[in-house]
Image (tube, rainbow, N blue to C red):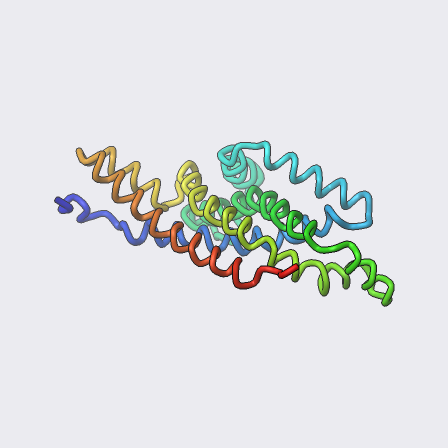
Length: 222
């Protein structure tokens, strides 16, 4: 039944999906945290930038962001992100950049929801002790915000895993691109779809379960 899988690098395709997810998740968490800090910061210009970025990016289809990273940055401006002209490497890195730009907006909102759970009195007490805004955010607010936002961040991570399929539009050799190739070459549509659906379930379901348990374990008791 599965003889048609010979000649296709199924594990390699899903490994590319995992790499896209991991690199994009790390970048999105860093940039999303900075955006969240901007959105709750005391500087009006930074608040405006953070708010405009989130509202703008969240309302753009991810496909447009990924295509712009390829057509706009690479083909028009010649940006290769250290890929040295190797098409697969360049496209992979551009896809990661596009996913970071898009996903960080949702990470920002998830973290902002966590920040809103921190009592205002704690920040006021920290300021009364002489801590500046950066110190209050880093030492008091963000540690509690991350603990409160584990479940929303888990949802963002699961969505990111599924969103990596959009990277196929610029030729990144991940799972959905291989699925498209297999559907075109093999007369096994239902079986191929079931295999790739099962593969993504294996990636996302454990993530949801682990993050759910982590969220309960680190939840702030109030």
